[in-house]
Length: 146
Image (cartoon, rainbow, N blue to C red; front, side, top):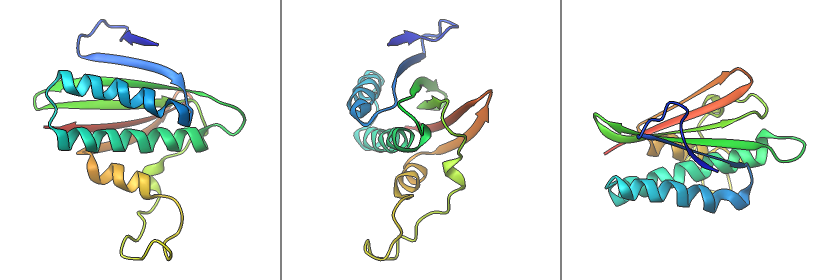
């Protein structure tokens, strides 16, 4: 479901969907379409898409222990400086992935512990990333400027 925010802002769009791996394509199409409308450079577009995909995969795999839950994705176009803010909101288990230690990327893939690389990539690719748990919801917000 695609809709304008409740305040009618022209700069903000949202999409609510099941938090499943199958919906990664839906998320990426939603984001890509908006980035292209706002002349996002290809490198920034790739970084944003990778980060959003990794965060949705984490929500799909870990947020809901029994069954499938929802995720709401909100895009807010920033104008000074130009960029985008993306918020993923779910009502899954409260969890701040930003508190997880970064993986030791100096180790070989065989030596590294499984997990954490997606969040690490999102932190490295985005200009800002934050988490808060508010009113029963996890809110993970990331910003990229161009």
